[in-house]
Length: 278
Ligand code: GLU
Image 1 (cartoon, rainbow, N blue to C red):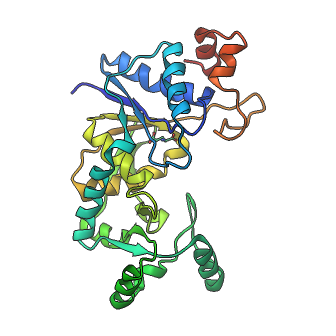
Image 2: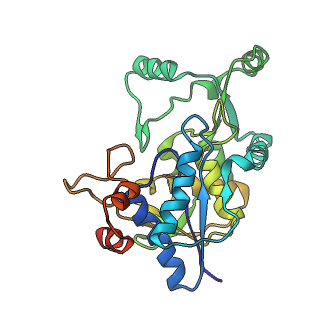
């Protein structure tokens, strides 16, 4: 089977060195295997994504010397596919509407005294999982906005134990309950990062997902979604994150130098590759 990798940035800002490393890592993995490299634009969050950042992604990657298969998949053009997948889960009773606001969740956790901490913070206390069905229907009829959450315990009862293969860690036993009942469709968008990325990797035939170690925990949920939706499980390679000069991770919002600014101040693509060690 030929290797298919991808780089999947969100156009919420200009690319920085951390992105260059992730893109080159995926591109090199495909090139070494004589495989295929895809670019996917993860633009479901319309409030944060901007066209100029998407244009910047194409320009920066081209400048770096990367090429990718066309057409580029843009998530905003596939909302109906995500909705259909959510509907398949809903029909099996695996999702429930959650009307909670962030403030209500905080208040519920404070009332309970504590909540287990997951990779994304405190785990949702399950308030809406236990709503009586008449109450649920009344709230839907009253047009209260709601997200859809995956009932992870029910889902796991369907799938049984799961694992995946990570190129760094070997066989990893999936523990999707770590996150609690994750949101799979947001109040304002008919999908979520977890659902869209998992479905896309399958639909695009990705065989090797390379991405930063910060996304390692997300794979626990992605593996569960694959099992529920009958999707192929790719191989994973979660790579280290590039640190800045001060040793701190280059997070998107940490003011890391962008590829555009490096280019403007005279850095060459070869210099950028050397900076990230690829
Ligand atoms: N869109 C995600 C990001 O920009 C990456 C998704 C993934 O590689 O799974 O962080």
